[in-house]
Image 1 (cartoon, each protein chain N blue to C red):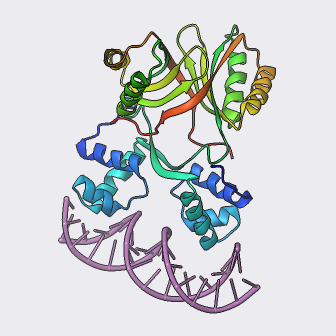
Image 2: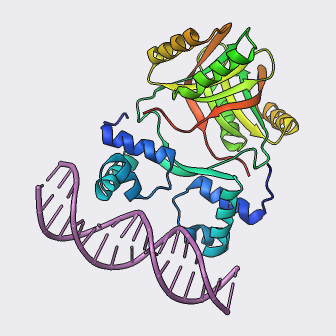
Image 3: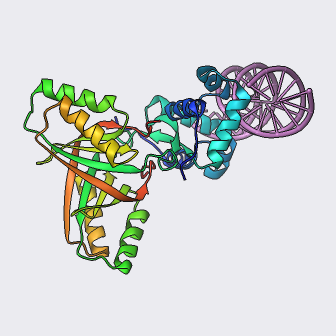
Length: 153
Length: 153
DNA sequence: CTTGAAAGCACTAAAAG
DNA sequence: CTTTTAGTGCTTTCAAG
């Protein structure tokens, strides 16, 4: 899965992560190349799956999504059918921004963005009514110190 | 901070979140409007800070960043000077993708992306040598079930 | 909101290193 | 094999109705 990238590729990726609206000419100038080679490298990296997609980043506060919870989940069930239902529920709920299966005594962690604590409770009640969960701890974020989509290159 | 958005604005945002590479004409067609009004709405939402920026989403696996940790931090220190140093350290480290200050007995949560467990240990040793930390629990992600930048609208 | 028009840009192909 | 040059048609941007 890992793709071979040279220094120029990495510079281009850094520019695209920082600002995907720049023109090819601008990127080419910054990385010390020119339009066509930069365009070819970007195309190759899209085909190779290094660049997944391009998206607009929105401000959650400006949209009224003022509450962010990290949810630690322990479960007693480990059957395939239960897991299938659980994953489906997570993927279908748009307020679940992240979901990971973990190693260790905590089985899952979720990141959930909602309007307020009440909206979180609605989400929580809906989730536990869909699938059996042994233990849930919700961690409420008081302050987003850092949140970036920029991967280190 | 919260901005008033109508249904058309929300449809446009949904399109931009799903794929920011679409042309204005395409977006306009999908939301049932035309080029200029869509362009004006997007400009207004950028000025209002609803749309923060546009970015390329990269595949961490393809870049060889195969390990993801959630780090739960408890601290005994709550002085301004300690906090300043701690936040600075987090903001400067590119492997820290997210950092939140929490309510409750856990003080901070981090999301950290690195090449492997060894790289995490290097990060961890560097962090605890920079700032005094009372207790750290690292949760290792075995599987990214879901990871989206798309906020619910 | 629509039309329309100017400027800029992405993308392609073909030439040159 | 990679870069430069050059051209076409689409897209953004903006002014006027």
